[in-house]
Image (cartoon, rainbow, N blue to C red; front, side, top):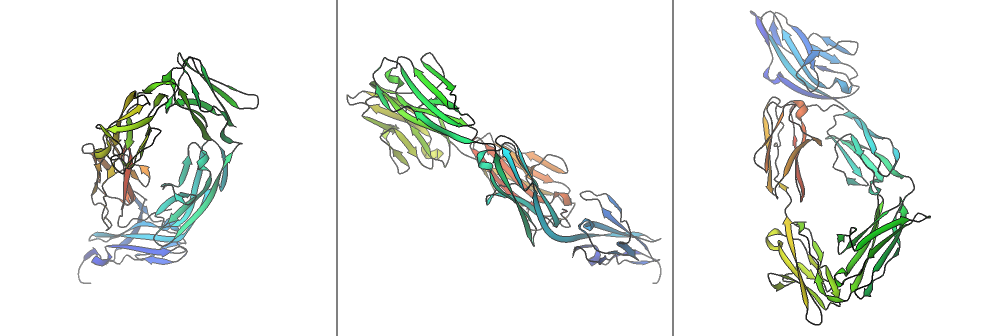
Length: 478
């Protein structure tokens, strides 16, 4: 060299990213040009931070001149390294991202567990290997939409029993493990052992309806009339007791029945392991009568099924009308002789309205009742993405979650790799009106790489969309 020269690197060496298998030996180069001969020091960043510490040299990790030699590499060697070169004239540094790969392996603990109804169950997916991009769970071959290593069921139900699988994946390979959840304790779903028949009565006397149910645990019995729960009142009394063999006997006592007491009665036996029910009509001679119907809210796209709550006997016909026109008026609508109205794939514009059911007897007497149907629209999240290309660290990114349709109020929340995002760790969330939420990261770091999900909810349902943020130089540690 002629004269003094501060350390410098060729532009191609200003950053690098390398991938090596575990248990191999390799070198990380730091080729600077300088005079006088510079001193080279190697540092490693503490994962997820901008803090760094000097690389510890030992029998396995050695430095020869400016080159760092790593023997029998392990996954923990992965990370971002900084080579700092100084001489009396100046200094320069270069970053190198190292990924030490290892075969993926997974196991679930415990392999099998037996849990009683209502108790919590926890499966932990323990895995090794590198890099690990995603963790996912399936139950009996169906995705659970869960991306955390720990799967927790707060209160085990009958449908929770089965086989659970944990999948670990990266771009090259995958690994999986399975475990079984069994139900503990003896159980028998409710069963109706004895029930009341359909009968026709004259007004005046009292009526007793009886339901006997069994099951383990002992079920509770409740009663309904035309879909509305019956509670104790001046004329309606419900009582129940448990027999010596564990069956539940429930009586519904109707004092001095009226023609308006007629309708479809139902007894339901329920416990935490299931439900059983029985229904039959009680016909009471008298003029037609239609009970008051509560406003019906239904989600757009679903099927409306409603039966006109008619009393009186005999009834010759039950029809449904809308805007003084008898239904059906299109293919979506079906009307049955028992007074049931079905509207498939309901839409707000065409199906939200007031419907009237008309009950008539053979002598021409009629009774009318109205039903207000409200069609609720669930949210729909407009797709968004961070783009296909990875983002440089320290750059700024922002995505908008726009709920293109849906009834307000709408709650919007963000998830990062399946966990709720809070406004810290460099992530900001800002609301713009009721249907727009903006997530921004002013200075992207490697820890910000992952899947971001916007979830929108209202009373009609929920919608979500996910996009992956890729960060240049990101290394996912196991």
